[in-house]
Image (cartoon, rainbow, N blue to C red):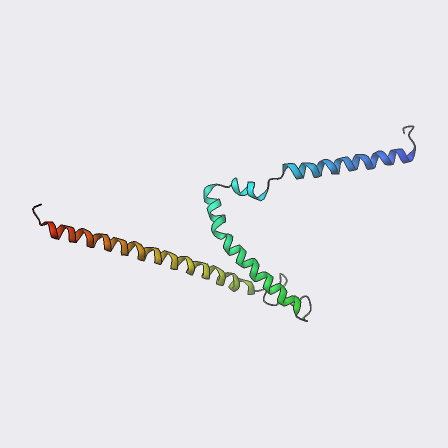
Length: 142
């Protein structure tokens, strides 16, 4: 035992504990990367996948908020989760909802690809017609 009074020893304990917690908070604040830094550190394939699925995650979050608001407005008990599946109940009620969103996104992408292909085919046809007209007007020996 040291010659310090009891209150001084407890003050030293609290000061040391506070210093440890303070150092931990500072390390967390300055050593943790931001979301942008994490995304910038991804490989190009992972970053492209992240950007591609960003819209899906946003739509899922919007749908989830709608369900939560609807469930909160109802008078049912808290364990009645509505369209969301409870982790305590077997079955996958939720799966169809996510598949619908993915299906809509896939249809939108497919429509965009079809429109792009139609434009390319139209341009190709126009170019080939122009080339054929030029060759017809010149004759075969020129």
